[in-house]
Length: 80
Picture 1 (tube, helix red, strand yellow):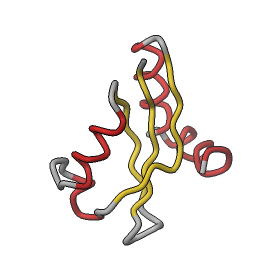
Picture 2 (tube, helix red, strand yellow):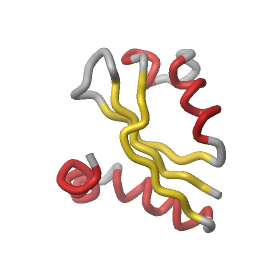
Picture 3 (tube, one colour):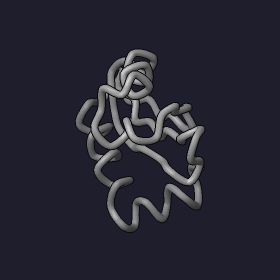
Picture 4 (cartoon, helix red, strand yellow):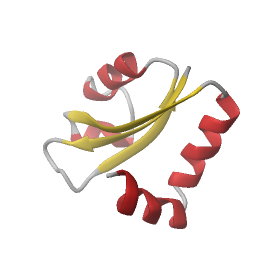
């Protein structure tokens, strides 16, 4: 399974991070261990939303959409 996830910074709740992974618990640990560029500035993170897919391409498409202008607006209105 492929998971599109939205993280929220516990330290700075207005900060969110959007990504996709095959293993969410491992990926969250990486974010909180400061192993990712942008997200390292705002640790610790918590999972706000997760959406599972069987299809990797569909997961990547949703991640890309949520990072776009209209996708981010949808995210803020419907997913968080």
